[in-house]
Image (cartoon, rainbow, N blue to C red; front, side):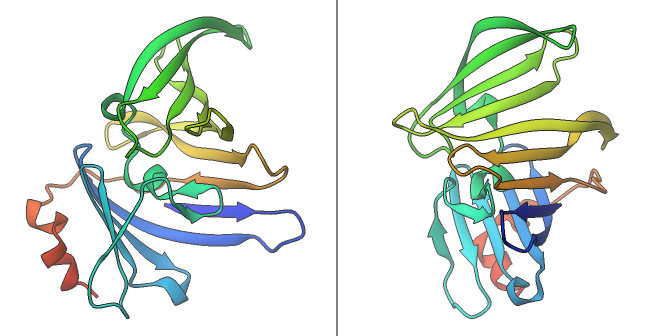
Amino acid sequence: MVINSVRPDKEADLHKYRVLSKGNENAVVMVTEPASERGQIMLMKGRDLWVFMPEVSQPVRISLAQRLTGQVANGDLARANFSGDYNPKIISTEKIGGESYHVLELIAVDRSVTYQRVVYWVNEKSGWPLKAEFYSLSNRLLKKCTYENFQTMAGRVRPTRLVMEDALRNGEKSVLEYSEMKLRDLPDKIFTKEYLKKLD
């Protein structure tokens, strides 16, 4: 996964990650670029998240909502589990570009998830997402996301490009691009703190 973040009057910031995931509850996120951050690894178990840094002997607990890079929170990369983390309800239907979309309101099941409320536009026919708005606990719009470039990866059609824009600071956005998704049988031991300590 590549994340390219832009801010007005600043140089673009490029980060690359390798992500291993098993189901919706286990993920390992490894930084491959920039070189200064290589060796950092995030482990997600359920809604618990730790970061391993080569210079620190013990893993550090972090939150899903904490910023990873640019407009991307840790949870955006390690845990995008709308069905498990939110209670959904359809609040309206909208026509956009000749297509019909269900507008869903997703309310967080508890405070540990990445966002407290999400408004999510889903194509009525295909079930594909179009866009989302992410809100804070005080119902403040934090960021917007559009889902683009749908391709078949690992046997399913999915968006391979996500554009996340800061709703509070104009012109700040991050583009997430997924590539080379492969289905593999990953042993459970990979998703443990003990195993990741051996990787640095």
